[in-house]
Length: 595
Image 1 (tube, rainbow, N blue to C red):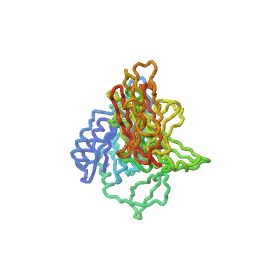
Image 2: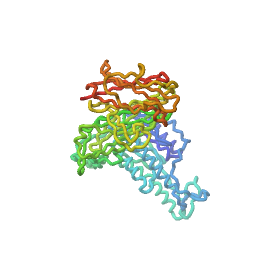
Image 3: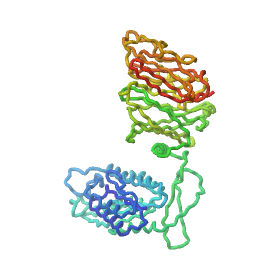
Image 4: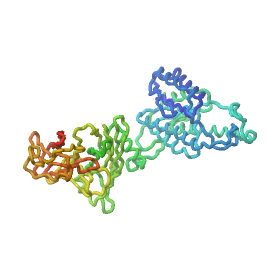
C-alpha cells in the first residue's frame, strides 16, 4: 500500500509539474500489479484525491488533474533580517516567523492525520511525501513533529521523503532571477553559507521524518524514480517478527526494539520501537477527553456500562423548547473508592444533538462527582443525572456517552428526538413526565420541572413501588377561551369521576379567575389499563385559567397514590380535553408497579 502525498503548500508551479510527472512515470512504468496506490494532497485543505486502487487509468487521471497554476501561497516567509536578502525596493522586510510556524504545524498535522486514519490497516504501508522541504523554527514545531512520527509508528507507516527541488546549485551572488543582495554578505561568503544553512534546515525535517518512521529521505537528486524503486524494494520482501513482551505494564511508554543477526556485512532496516498500550489509569487528561469524543462519534456503541435515558419537551416560546435529559446508571455498575470517611466516584457525561443534516446543534459535557458515607445503599439503587437543552422544533438524533472514571468503562445511549411545531397543532400539549420524587431546589432557569422551590425528578425507567407516589406532569399551551364558562367539575358526563380510589392531588387551578369573562376550560384525568381491562381511573380535574402566563400554559401536576393498584404492568392513558375548542389528546405511557 503506497500513499502519494503532494504537499502543494510548499511547491512552486514548476516543482508541482515535476512531482506530478514523476508520479505519472511511476504509475505507467514502475507500478506493479500488487501495488495499491492512493493520492492525497494538502492545499487549502487535506484531500483524498484518489482512494487506494490498482487502476492505472484512474491514477493517471487524478495526477493529470493537478492544476500547476493554482499555487496555495504557503511558501516560507522572511524572518525579518535584511542582511543578505534580495533588495526588492520595499521599505522594510516583514517578519513572518509566526506564519512559518503555523504552516509547518499544518503540514505535520496532515501527516499525523493520515497516520491515524491508516492505523486500522495492519500491514506495512508506505507514504511518499513530495515537498520542497520543511523548515522548523527552533523548538516551536517539535511537539507536532513528535506527534506525526508517533502516529506513523503506531500505524506501521513508513514515510519516504522526496525533495522535489532536485539537485540545486548555490550561486554565491544570488540567482539571476533575484535582485541584488543587500549588505556585505555577497562579498564575504556569508550569503553562500546562509543558502547552505537554509537548505540544510529545510531538508533536516525530511530526514527526521523518514529516519524515525523506518523510511528513507531522497535528496539532491534529479532522478525521482529512485524513491519509487526504494519503496518497492523495501516492501517487496521483508520478514515479520512477532514476540510477547515480558513487560506487562500498560503505561503507554515508548519501548525500544533491537534486532541483530549473525551474518556480517548486512544492513538491517526495521522499526526502532513501539508504544505500549495504555490503560485508563495511565491515560492523560487529553487522552481521556479524546476517548470520549471518539466514542461519541463511533458507529458502534459501547455497552460495558449500562445507561438509560429519557427526554421530553416543554414550550418556552414558539421557536424555543426546553428539553429535559435524565440519565440513569445502576449503582451496582459504579465502582467506589474509599477516601477518608467517604466512598467516592466520578462519572463523565458527554452528549451531542444532531439535526437532520447531521450537524451538531447542541452539546452536553459534565463531570458528576459522587461522595457518600457508604456506597452500600447506592449499590441497590440508581444514580441519576439531570440536564436540559434549548432547541427549536425539528427532528433530531441524540447520543449520550457516560464513563465511570475508576476502570474507564463506558456506556452509550442513542435515541431520536422529535420536537413538534405547535403553530399548526389544534391542541398544544407538552410531553408527559412521570416522577416519584419531589425535592427542594434553588435552581433558577428555564426548567419547567422546577417550581416554587421544588424540583420534580423524572422517573426514567417508569418502575414504581406500591408505597410510592406517582406524579404526572404536563402542560397545555394556548387553550381556547370559553365564553360560557359556568360549568364546574363533576357536572355532566365529562365531569363525572370514575373509579373508587382516592382523588389525586393537583396543582392545576380549579377556580375561575375573577373578572375574566372568557376563562379557559380544560379537562383532564388519567386511566390505568391492565391488559385490556381498565383497572383504575382518576377523578376529572378542571382548569379554568392559565397559571403560567409567561408561557401561556396551564400546568397539570397530578399526585396519584399507588395503593389502589396491584403490582403489574399498566398502560396509562392521559385524557386531555379542551372543552372550549372541542379538541382532545390521549397520549399513553407504560409503567410497572412492584410490591
